[in-house]
Image (tube, rainbow, N blue to C red; front, side, top):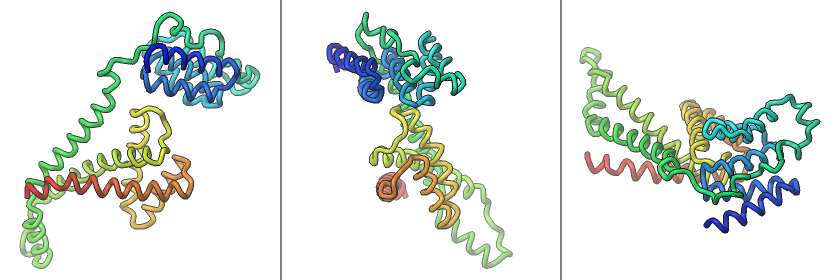
Length: 274
C-alpha cells in the first residue's frame, strides 16, 4: 500500500467515523495497521473507534501503548474518559468519546510510515529464538541419554531390590527438557491452529502469542489428568475463544494434525543421530 492508497483508505475510514460507522472505520484502520504497524496516526483513530464501538478494554490497551511509546496527548485524554464511571460514559454518549477533529491529524501533514523493520520483527525473532533454544536443549539432552540402558537398569533394580538404582538426575533432566520442548511446540501449534480456524482474539502477533502461551500452559497441565483433563482443556479453550461446536471439533483436528507433523519432523534428527 503506497502513500496515495493509504491516504485514500484513511479518508474513507474518517468518513465512516464521522457517520458514526465505527466498525466500518475500524475495519479499514486494521488494514492500515497491518500495512504500517506501530504508527500512532493509525493506532489513535483505532482507539477512538474501539471506544465508540463498545470495546473499552481494547481501546485502553491501545491508548496505554500510545502513551508509553509516544506520550500521545489524545490517547491520554481518551484514556481519562475511558476510566470515568460507567454512568458518566453513558451520559457522554458513544459518539462523544473523543470523536473530534483530532482523528488522524498527523496524516494531514505527512504520509504514513511503519515502525522500524527490526522493531516490527522483534516479536517474531524472539519467538523463533525461544523455539530454537528449546529444541537445541532437548536435542542435546536426548542425544546424551541412553534410554535403552537406563530402562534396563531401572527394570532390573525393580525386580531385584538389592541392585542399586542409578542416579535419577538424568531422568529428571530429560523430563524437564521434554516438558519445555513440548510446551514450546504446543504454543506454536496452538497459535497456527487457532489462526487456521480464524479464532485469534487480537490483531497482533505478540498479544496473541502471550494469550496462547498462557492457555497452552494451563491446558498442558490439565492433560496430565486422564480423560477429564482433556475434556476440561477443550471446554476452557472453547469458552475463552468463543468457539461453536463445529469450530471446536475443527480446531481439535487441526491441532492434532499440526502437532503430529511438527513432532515427527522435529524428532527425525534425533532418530538419525541415534
